Length: 340
Ligand code: SAM
Ligand code: SF4
Image (cartoon, rainbow, N blue to C red; front, side):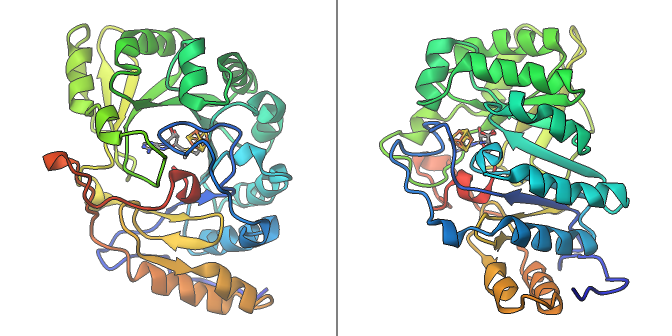
């Protein structure tokens, strides 16, 4: 394979270095969370998906161009057959110092099976999604999931030595009554906890997202009735902001993707499981890297050129908006396609 010897790192037109790649390795999932997928979700034909070798080639190209953090997501990344081969391939970049962090976002259902291997391959931290600690509610929101299996997966990750961050989608009328229980559980188990505002992605059937929308400023106000909430300056280049609860010392993240307050420091791009590169979570502009990859099986120069060209189109900011009770800037693709 040809590779630039000392490539110029990726920097977008607004002088933001692109150091973080999220890659969705499958659109499939063993759950059907109501805010993410419809019950009868149509998945992509297999030939549309990048093979594990193609994923390796593409991610490696980004790493050679300066990406230092890779997050593997989906769909559910751990249901993709052979996915440990891909983690193993990526771990060579940890070994040679090109990559600082290899991580994943998962629903946790398969964690018991894979935690040891992931830890051995250099995964130090994992984000596990969990919206409720109630068995019946868990079954309702995921449609197909079992809470006990996910809690066991979380234990497995910790036993393997990984740090766990819990991702909780804030849903009005669903988990607003569990706020303190979730916070106390995370503190007791020493897991980080991040709340995510629900986003208008994809067609999910007849769920009404405006009904579910629980603004994190309201969630924070509820937290403040019991805790002293202290803002911290920590930034990750993405939409997360962090606070510390004085009484417990724990860190809580707030992801409000609908606000614009992070675009100026955005360091990330997203690659779908079909090889489309999205430069912004909130916009449809994309580049088809799969076509370039498949047209040039033995030469990475056109791929590198296509990546550079795509980054030249990274927009300054996005345009989600829940105001006036309509969802403007609605994005038709599913989170499971782009990766959360
Ligand atoms: N299956 C894995 C999981 O659930 O963690 C990884 C993919 S999932 C799409 C990534 C994250 O996106 C999860 O934390 C999930 O809760 C979140 N998510 C999915 N649909 C969402 C939506 N419409 N709004 C906000 N977050 C969403
Ligand atoms: Fe699957 Fe994750 Fe979407 Fe739930 S949020 S349906 S676990 S991809």
